[in-house]
Length: 421
Image 1 (tube, rainbow, N blue to C red):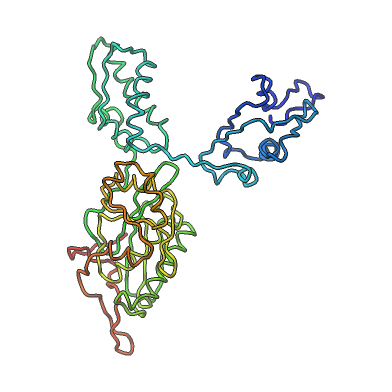
Image 2: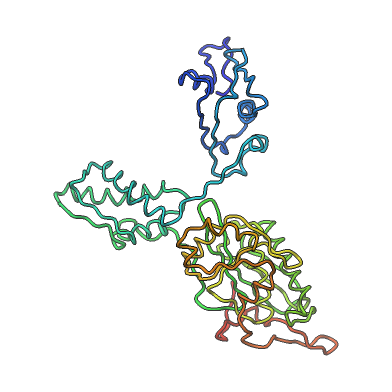
């Protein structure tokens, strides 16, 4: 398909690139290669090696199509490739490309796109012209976006709007004249139970529970991080489908807490007398990356010191063994998720302060964005005063050390026991 077929074969044709040049009748067109991350190889061949000849500026001035059997200059062609996941692009190909990251639409942008383009398009597609008055309430539209779609773009949203418009088309066919209004009640009635949920801020300030921020191909979300302590031998357990990088980040956070036990008002031996269980809910969803480092450290230190974490504070940043907070990616998606969840303060690395002007104006106005460079700053902002003195047990020598509760739970800010699953 790329290099063409040799003319000895019946039905031989030039490759797609040469045929495209023949169709446009110019040597310097713009050629778009859509979803190049889906390129795979099997026993029939490896398309990525052929694409390398096309995209590599050092080679494509002498590209040879098997059908033409003469070199052809592709150096004047502008190639634009698209991809959903750039990590899936073969490394040799990606090395020849200039990468431009395009963020997904935020909720406000989706609302505008739907009202201006998607709704009129669906009304026309279902045979209803301007004479039919159909109104889609913004609140109903936000309900569709939040609970019936989960995507970076608007493809599924368009299909969802189409479903609602078809319901109205049936009523029009029954000689109802309107006007018609799509409300939140109508959305629930016709689309059924909510398919997706999004993270919200915790209901109360709790010990051992911090709020992190995550981002994926479909946007950002808030991430609850739970730490439960019990009397034991220093065993550490991590659950919640955590990847290797996130596990290492948890180990680094724990090492920082152990190394700075004195400053935190703890004895180092407290860590050896405690079993630590770190859990990130939504266990069916794989999670990875270093950006939850400060959230993990905050939850661990909160559990050991009995200091509740402010429920309206979310945080993102990688943490080092010395407590330094390093830069992260995906700040736009993460802050939008925090804004949507009802968070009012977001702690971020100081190195990401340069990205704040790129955030949506509404997010910048409503959120208190605090850049930090060290974990101690995070703890000063996120932790409240201790609701109870640290728990102690006696060692074999009779020494009392700070350890967690023996029942595996941790008290909430109002003193009630909160058991973790």
